[in-house]
Length: 65
Image 1 (cartoon, one colour):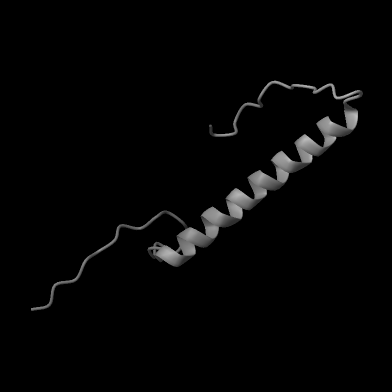
Image 2: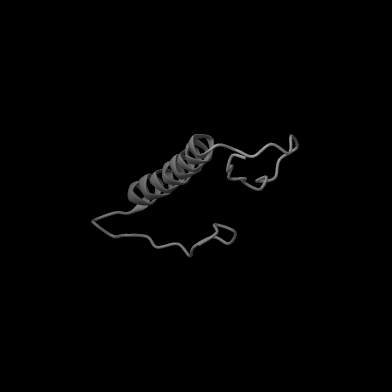
């Protein structure tokens, strides 16, 4: 009798568990998207500021943090 570890399904329509590499790739893609959005926000805030003035906007809801 062999010992096998089972991983519960991670959701999704196939019902098949995701591999660790696929999970890491999805997390990295989400992180890159968040960083790109943050960079765009910072760039636009920097363009709008004059004489070294920094504009601060309230954090948006639903960011997950």
